[in-house]
Amino acid sequence: MENVLDLIFKRRSVRIFSKQKVEKEAITKLLQAAMAAEYKPEWLGSYVISGPDLLKISGAKAAQGLRATGYPSGPRSHRGERLFVRQMSRLYPDEIPGTHSRIGYAAAQLVVEGLRRAGPDLTRDGFIEALESLRDWTGGLIPSISYTPVDHRGITGLALQRAIDGRWVIEKSLLKLKE
Image (cartoon, rainbow, N blue to C red):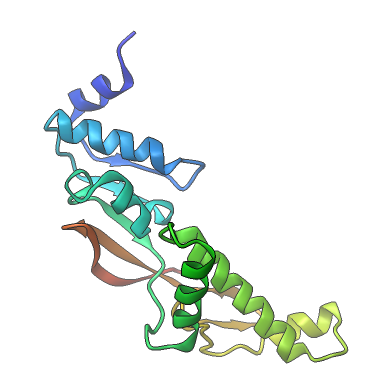
């Protein structure tokens, strides 16, 4: 039976990483093995791999040209961005926060805002009503989101990014999701 990497290298076609449970170490090994074999396909991945941690782990050269969708960043001047960076560097000084850290933190901010708006006499219906009152709200890590009684999507767009010289560069800023 042929090695999986040998099969991939023979095809020389676009490879797609899904957002299923894919460990960054496995993706890193694949990118590095492809680089060593001088295999240069058009890589495409989902938001799971779009964090700065993948670029650090795999190395800029191995990840060069990799495309991935990701959540667009929120306003970098927002207080929430500064708090996130400060807390993560204090709690995890040797780590680069990945995509899931940012999204998890943003989700926690959203819950806190919903609880704040729901008030001290919290009920399930009151919490839902509070979240549905959000219009163009952001905690700083993601673009502004809105909820309504009939639309609970929140984020309605993704960015297409490409790894260039060890950083993610936005190729297409907002791919709007259909209703």
